[in-house]
Length: 175
Image 1 (cartoon, rainbow, N blue to C red):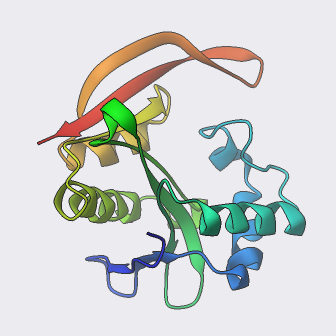
Image 2: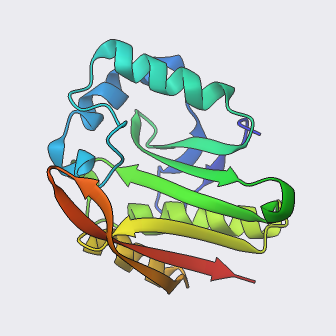
Protein backbone atom coordinates (compact mmCIF):
# COMPACT_ATOMS: atom_id res chain seq x y z
CA UNK A 1 0.00 0.00 0.00
CA UNK A 2 2.96 2.34 0.33
CA UNK A 3 2.97 3.53 -3.29
CA UNK A 4 0.22 6.09 -2.76
CA UNK A 5 0.85 9.74 -3.59
CA UNK A 6 -1.82 12.28 -2.69
CA UNK A 7 -1.64 15.99 -3.52
CA UNK A 8 -2.76 18.29 -0.71
CA UNK A 9 -4.75 21.53 -1.09
CA UNK A 10 -1.65 23.53 -0.12
CA UNK A 11 0.46 24.30 -3.22
CA UNK A 12 3.63 22.22 -3.39
CA UNK A 13 2.62 19.74 -0.68
CA UNK A 14 1.69 16.09 -1.00
CA UNK A 15 1.63 12.81 0.87
CA UNK A 16 4.02 10.30 -0.67
CA UNK A 17 5.95 7.18 0.26
CA UNK A 18 9.10 7.64 2.30
CA UNK A 19 12.41 7.22 0.45
CA UNK A 20 15.90 6.56 1.76
CA UNK A 21 16.79 9.97 0.31
CA UNK A 22 14.57 11.48 3.05
CA UNK A 23 16.99 10.39 5.78
CA UNK A 24 18.63 13.82 6.13
CA UNK A 25 15.36 15.75 6.36
CA UNK A 26 13.87 13.18 8.77
CA UNK A 27 16.91 13.48 11.02
CA UNK A 28 16.92 17.28 10.81
CA UNK A 29 13.25 17.67 11.71
CA UNK A 30 12.86 14.76 14.14
CA UNK A 31 15.73 16.18 16.20
CA UNK A 32 13.28 18.38 18.10
CA UNK A 33 12.10 18.02 21.70
CA UNK A 34 8.84 19.84 20.95
CA UNK A 35 7.89 17.12 18.46
CA UNK A 36 9.14 14.28 20.67
CA UNK A 37 7.07 15.57 23.62
CA UNK A 38 3.90 14.66 21.71
CA UNK A 39 5.14 11.31 20.41
CA UNK A 40 5.74 7.86 21.84
CA UNK A 41 9.06 7.41 23.57
CA UNK A 42 10.17 5.10 20.74
CA UNK A 43 10.31 8.13 18.42
CA UNK A 44 14.03 8.87 18.02
CA UNK A 45 15.17 11.99 19.84
CA UNK A 46 18.02 12.61 19.75
CA UNK A 47 17.84 11.31 16.20
CA UNK A 48 20.95 9.95 14.54
CA UNK A 49 21.37 9.29 10.83
CA UNK A 50 21.02 5.57 11.62
CA UNK A 51 17.79 6.18 13.61
CA UNK A 52 16.28 8.14 10.72
CA UNK A 53 17.25 5.52 8.16
CA UNK A 54 15.87 2.71 10.32
CA UNK A 55 12.56 4.58 10.81
CA UNK A 56 12.19 5.10 7.05
CA UNK A 57 13.05 1.48 6.21
CA UNK A 58 10.43 0.27 8.70
CA UNK A 59 7.84 2.58 7.12
CA UNK A 60 8.68 1.26 3.66
CA UNK A 61 8.28 -2.38 4.67
CA UNK A 62 5.12 -2.24 6.76
CA UNK A 63 2.14 -3.91 5.15
CA UNK A 64 -0.54 -3.02 7.70
CA UNK A 65 -1.46 0.41 6.41
CA UNK A 66 -0.20 3.63 4.88
CA UNK A 67 3.05 5.16 6.15
CA UNK A 68 3.72 8.35 4.23
CA UNK A 69 5.91 11.43 4.23
CA UNK A 70 4.33 14.86 4.28
CA UNK A 71 6.52 16.49 1.65
CA UNK A 72 7.23 19.71 -0.18
CA UNK A 73 8.82 19.59 -3.61
CA UNK A 74 12.22 19.71 -1.90
CA UNK A 75 12.00 17.54 1.23
CA UNK A 76 9.95 15.57 3.72
CA UNK A 77 8.67 17.85 6.50
CA UNK A 78 6.62 15.39 8.51
CA UNK A 79 4.95 12.02 8.61
CA UNK A 80 1.46 10.58 8.63
CA UNK A 81 0.31 7.00 8.95
CA UNK A 82 -2.94 5.12 8.92
CA UNK A 83 -2.45 1.72 10.50
CA UNK A 84 -5.31 -0.57 9.52
CA UNK A 85 -6.47 -3.10 12.05
CA UNK A 86 -7.31 -6.71 11.28
CA UNK A 87 -9.80 -9.37 12.37
CA UNK A 88 -12.95 -7.93 13.95
CA UNK A 89 -11.57 -4.37 13.73
CA UNK A 90 -10.59 -4.61 10.05
CA UNK A 91 -12.73 -1.58 9.12
CA UNK A 92 -10.90 0.68 11.60
CA UNK A 93 -7.60 2.49 11.40
CA UNK A 94 -5.47 4.49 13.79
CA UNK A 95 -4.00 7.78 12.63
CA UNK A 96 -0.56 9.08 13.68
CA UNK A 97 1.26 12.15 12.40
CA UNK A 98 3.77 14.90 13.04
CA UNK A 99 4.78 18.06 11.22
CA UNK A 100 8.18 19.67 11.72
CA UNK A 101 8.10 22.76 13.91
CA UNK A 102 9.10 25.34 11.26
CA UNK A 103 5.88 24.42 9.42
CA UNK A 104 3.47 24.63 12.37
CA UNK A 105 0.47 26.93 12.09
CA UNK A 106 0.19 26.67 8.30
CA UNK A 107 -2.66 24.14 8.11
CA UNK A 108 -0.37 21.32 7.00
CA UNK A 109 -1.46 18.80 9.64
CA UNK A 110 -5.10 19.65 8.92
CA UNK A 111 -4.58 19.09 5.18
CA UNK A 112 -2.62 15.85 5.70
CA UNK A 113 -5.29 14.47 8.04
CA UNK A 114 -7.97 15.34 5.47
CA UNK A 115 -6.05 13.66 2.66
CA UNK A 116 -5.35 10.39 4.41
CA UNK A 117 -8.69 10.11 6.20
CA UNK A 118 -10.66 10.80 3.00
CA UNK A 119 -8.61 8.10 1.28
CA UNK A 120 -9.06 5.66 4.15
CA UNK A 121 -12.80 6.18 4.48
CA UNK A 122 -13.31 6.23 0.70
CA UNK A 123 -10.86 4.04 -1.18
CA UNK A 124 -10.02 1.66 1.68
CA UNK A 125 -13.64 1.32 2.82
CA UNK A 126 -12.83 2.00 6.46
CA UNK A 127 -15.75 3.10 8.61
CA UNK A 128 -13.76 4.45 11.56
CA UNK A 129 -10.47 6.31 11.87
CA UNK A 130 -9.23 7.41 15.25
CA UNK A 131 -6.26 9.15 16.83
CA UNK A 132 -4.94 9.20 20.38
CA UNK A 133 -3.44 12.56 21.34
CA UNK A 134 -2.04 14.05 24.52
CA UNK A 135 -4.48 16.50 26.08
CA UNK A 136 -1.72 19.12 26.01
CA UNK A 137 -1.34 18.92 22.20
CA UNK A 138 -3.87 21.61 21.35
CA UNK A 139 -2.69 22.06 17.76
CA UNK A 140 -3.30 18.40 17.02
CA UNK A 141 -6.70 18.49 18.69
CA UNK A 142 -7.69 21.49 16.54
CA UNK A 143 -6.49 19.78 13.34
CA UNK A 144 -8.58 16.69 14.12
CA UNK A 145 -11.67 18.76 14.99
CA UNK A 146 -11.37 20.73 11.72
CA UNK A 147 -11.60 17.39 9.92
CA UNK A 148 -14.79 16.30 11.66
CA UNK A 149 -13.15 14.08 14.28
CA UNK A 150 -15.10 14.01 17.53
CA UNK A 151 -13.88 13.28 21.02
CA UNK A 152 -14.79 9.73 22.03
CA UNK A 153 -12.77 9.16 25.14
CA UNK A 154 -10.59 10.77 27.75
CA UNK A 155 -8.00 8.71 29.57
CA UNK A 156 -6.86 10.46 32.73
CA UNK A 157 -3.17 9.77 33.28
CA UNK A 158 -3.29 7.68 30.10
CA UNK A 159 0.41 7.95 29.27
CA UNK A 160 3.66 8.49 31.12
CA UNK A 161 5.95 11.00 29.41
CA UNK A 162 8.99 12.87 30.68
CA UNK A 163 8.53 11.72 34.26
CA UNK A 164 4.87 12.64 34.58
CA UNK A 165 1.45 11.30 33.75
CA UNK A 166 -0.40 13.01 30.90
CA UNK A 167 -4.05 12.67 29.94
CA UNK A 168 -4.77 11.14 26.55
CA UNK A 169 -7.77 11.96 24.38
CA UNK A 170 -9.28 9.76 21.66
CA UNK A 171 -10.79 11.45 18.62
CA UNK A 172 -12.58 9.54 15.88
CA UNK A 173 -14.27 10.07 12.56
CA UNK A 174 -16.98 7.52 11.78
CA UNK A 175 -19.03 7.13 8.61
